[in-house]
Image (cartoon, rainbow, N blue to C red; front, side, top):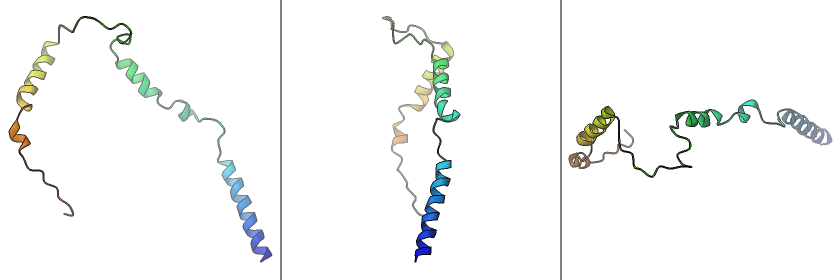
Length: 95
């Protein structure tokens, strides 16, 4: 019985030593850089970073012609089709 307790105690000590070797005291390079690429991408895609600090009092008055045409065309063709809403919802389970 005493040998069994000794083996269990030694096993616990060895496992504790192995787990202690896996511990990191500081942040890894990946953890230090986590999220920076997303923040950088958002900064680079922001047209006017100071817009929230000094908002314009005038509404936007112009838009790119091609983009406005595409928006109107998609609105006219895809939005407001009540026939599409009347389609039944089919849920297949176990097939």
